[in-house]
Length: 575
Image (cartoon, rainbow, N blue to C red):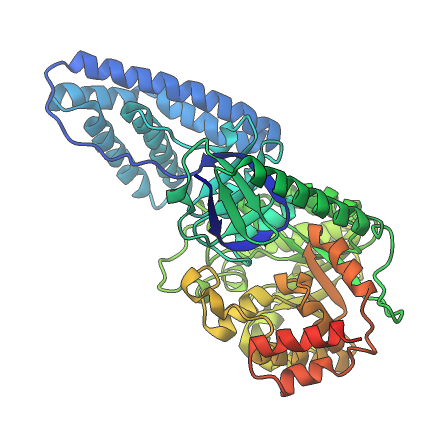
């Protein structure tokens, strides 16, 4: 029976394929007394053998798609399976305690995990706790006869159905087979949604019930244009969405004609449209979509895709590749933005009541300066290969910016003294995402080289609404006059000091927001690469002269988010 499930359109496009449920299975079991220990041990050996074969396949796929270093984690997992100290302890537990193998595996693994986690003076050994936990989960799944989902094993076309997708989940999706995804929770600014746009995968999020409404293997259509998932579609539905996909493809073909053109409004004003990236592999999309630069390089993915802190050399190679690939076009690199919902297993952070307002981003960098200095040295060395601009995330006070700049200047002086080639033209700026900083933009503008407005967090913090909480998603209001006043103040403050202002939040590529930002005189618009040509096409149809009074009316006359939607429509569609 056909079922249409509404959600939030998170990434444009149409996809049809069978559902792959990326949902953790129930691994609960009942403790039992046993009389045949040999039979239980035989079950264990079968589960270990199956797990080992599975890990070999996953490792080979990871090596091909992610590289040798990233694949090594699976060698570590295989080593645990082959460790007689671990497997022998499980067998002995079965024999001594006369319990089923599930209970024995659970007891032994918990003991190992406790020992590893207690090695506080040895971070490497502490990390092994996570390996034991992962291996145990895999073996337990095979003992219980349930499937353990793993995106790396997907070898045919699917759409991913999940409660949510972590950044690391999304980063592992193979576009060859994964045609899109749909989730229970999330919004347009969730990291999974942002990654979907970077990967050009249709996505619908915030459906509430998709994991309950879909079974593995069901045919699902994802409509990332309107925000709907159609389960078990009829032949007529499939034909309808094939036509919709064709129409969208034709529209994209028209946009693609603008790939090599500058971004110019109807009255001849030029603005820069840049792209956001997460890894050097995203460069291809940036170039194919004709972006005029990179307005946000999210370097935290370098850290998230590594098993330990990336070395200076590893980072240097990544930054150099991006700078060289952009052939002189500006690249704005954001220093490590870890914390909130982005965690590193090898860098434990304190448990916090509200991690989004806690120990994260520049706060970690200034506190753990050995990490910060390594990143800055890598960036400085790479600066000789292109046009580098560095920005610091989550700056809340002038002192934080000054402290970060001081560390930068110290590392630059050391490299110059050592004879290392470093660019003399590196701009230093900041993410404008903390309301306290936005209010004082006129003071910050005297000391920074540029601002890049991060609307995702600026809106979250200003509206006191967690951007990942579907219950308050209605408060994600980019056109709210309070948000627009802050944005306009930031832009005006930058211009008053002769500095430029950009926007790297998702609002920069929003069709309603673009006319407002043009009216405010925003200089640079950075967005998912897949949005670049659409926004360029939109800007060609708009005249800054016609929009001249739009911003003032939006911040002074409107009262609600909806008022400003109507106001923009009035300006854009007036005859």
